Image (cartoon, rainbow, N blue to C red; front, side):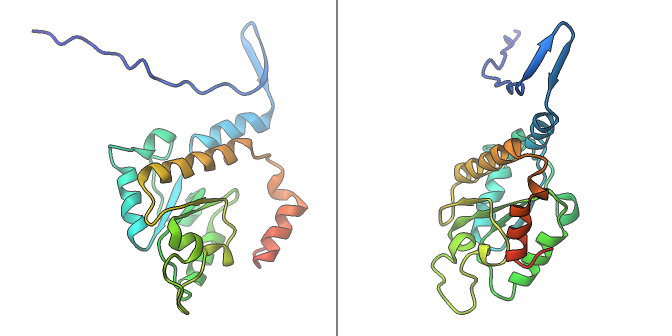
Length: 187
């Protein structure tokens, strides 16, 4: 008895960027082509210290599968990653390490604060816990929750993809961006 072949008819095809097309050619701006490539090939660096890291592990599992967004490769070296995902409680002793990891990442780089502890210190309003990682490094996307569900982490990741896709290639060389980095003491 043969099994009938089933095709996945819910495949979503990425829209092509704005441009001009004709017989055998397609022209668009370099920014849009690079943005599309970057959006679908983000290499995250998980910086997990507590329970939010466990939820992130569930996001990597087969049920949620963050690899379908182009992030199959988890990097554990900052020099090869685009996205720093900070998950969990960060103590004040850990803040210089987090900052060093951020500085070692190559441009362009993005940061996602996952969970209440990384975003605002969470329930730990004590002298030893950093009250939000945005005190030491700039944050692009905050994911709420304690701990956030895998769907929330995926939503945050999709927001990072939107930022990456729409970012100009010249943004990182602008005076506003340099001023932001200088406000954190990063050259």
